[in-house]
Image 1 (cartoon, one colour):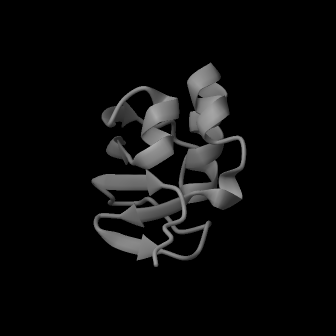
Image 2 (cartoon, one colour):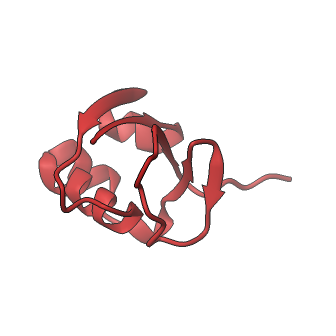
Length: 86
C-alpha cells in the first residue's frame, strides 16, 4: 500500500523532511505498527519516534485518538507532537 506521510514541527525536523511517500509492508496495518516501522527504518526515524506515545496522528485529515487506528484505505497520515497553546 502506498501512503503519503506528512511530518510536522519537531517530528519534521528529526525526520529531515516535510513529507514522503512510502510503500508499506503488508504487516503495517495500524498507527502503532506504522510508528514502529518508521522507527526501525533508520536513525532519523529512531530519533523521531523514540517515544511513540507522544506522537499525535491524523488519517486523511481526521484526528485519531486510538493508536491502533487502522490504515486500510488511507491516503495520508500526518504525524506531529502534542499541540499546546495559551
